[in-house]
Every structure is written in C-alpha cells, then in structure tokens.
Image 1 (spheres, rainbow, N blue to C red):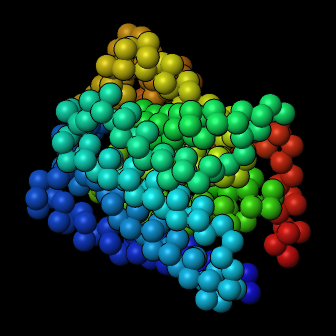
Image 2: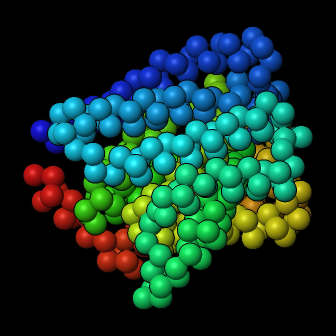
Image 3: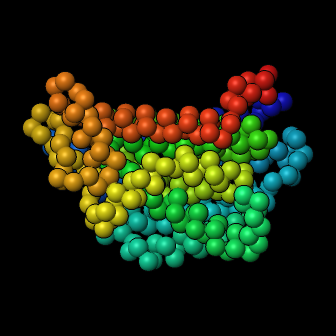
Length: 338
C-alpha cells in the first residue's frame, strides 16, 4: 500500500517535465528571458522556469492529500500540509514578482523581507513545530520570531549561491534529499514524501537547466525551495541538522556581505570559454571555487561546469558530515522500507 505514496512524486515530475518546454517557448516569445552570463556570446535563455516546478509540486501535494483521505482515510497532518502549501504559493508569487521586475531591479530588500514575513504567517497561526530547542522552552518566541526568521533567511539566501547553469537546481536536490532521509528515519514520513515531491520536480527541471541551460529557475524557484527547506526543518523538528546542511549558504552570505551584497557571482569569461575570477578578492563560493580549481587543474583552465561540480561536492560532504555528527543511521532506511 505504501507504494501508492510514490504516485504524488511521479505526478509532480510528469507535470513539471511536460510543462517546461511550453514555458520555455512562451517565455522567450514575451521577452521573459535573459543572457547566459558565464558564456562567450551567451544565448538568450527563458527565465522564471520555477513556475512549472511549483505547478508540479502543488499537484504532487494535492495528489498526496487525495491518497491519504480517499484511500487511507487519514486526515493526520492535513492542516500542516495546507499551511505548507500556502507558504510555498505566497513565496512563489513573491519570487515571480521579483523575476518580472528583473534581477537588476526587483523588489527592494525591505519590501522583500516584509513580504516573506507575511508568507510565514500560515505556519505562525497554526503554531507549527516544537517550541523547545536544546531543552529550552521558547514559548511564543518560537512561532512569532524564529519561524518568520527561518522562512525569511532560507528563502532569501538560497539565490545567493547562483548564476551558474544547474547550480541552484542541483543544490536544492541535494539538500532536500538529505532532509527527506532524516525526516523518514525520524518517523515523519509525510515530510519525506513532500520533500521528495519537490526533488522529483527539480529533477525534471534539471533536464532543461543543466549545462547549457535552456531555462533559468529565477527567484520563482529559489525562494520556495529555500522556504521548503525551512518548513521541513520546522515541522520535522530538525532545525539543527538543517542549519548544518545550510553551511554553504551561510558561508556564501558572509562572503556576499563582505562585498556589501553588491558583488555578483558571475565569472569573467575568456575567449576560449574558460572563466576567471571577476574580482581580486573572493565574494562568494563561486569565486573561491574558481580560485581553487585554477590552483588544482594542470592546465589552469576552469569552466562553468567545474565550479558547479566542486560546490556540489562540498555540499555532499557537508550532508555526509551532518549524518555522522547527528548520528543519522542511513542504513536503517533499507530495513524500514523492506
């Protein structure tokens, strides 16, 4: 019977997969497109492809609810699921607004923060999560301060580590897959299914976003993926390991703050397609990756895919280290499944 719970994952993947070619064509036609910055004479690529991913994700969630209510006749966690869905839809709308206005203009920082605080309200009003952390009862501080802070922080920083084909997508896949494993082993299997629905939709998006990209995710995708990471941490009571998995983004935020959030992640492109450090100093993990790869590679030639692979490898190491530090028995997942 549990195999039925994989139907939402399959549906989410299919809708995202088949909607994306249509979106790519229409977005280019109306001018919702941008230049591929890390390539010589980079072509024009469709923007805001996250719309299709969110469509697939919402269909997956609704299918999951239908399976629970019609087949299993269970209404457990339904309020939490609808609250989660509300947050994702609001955050997606904020991200889409940002994309429509353009990444050079977009929403200004104070307005964006206010909107994201508003997006956290569906979780606040149901008093989501557990207010006790490390044995300390936080009371009202948790729903009214820490939940909005978590949503704002995760949603607004996930697009810091970006600007390279497939980077945002692969990072979302890695982090949400890691959190899905953790929630499954902790008995919150409904959260692991929700996480895997988004992972499946991101895999569909990866097909079109991989190098060379045919579509960019935009804030329409990065905002809700970041918000979902925070929501799973809150509802699954796994804030500590989620923050640990988020270490690359914490480092990225620190490096971006060094440049007063004005330095871009894009590289300087050479005539042969290889890339160089855009600044003399390091203002992001992307720049650090270029610097390290030029030291390591024998021919000193660094390409966009190299940067993405190194950052992804760093993220995988962080996740594996998190499993070890927080004593996550990943071998147990096979005994639970079979």
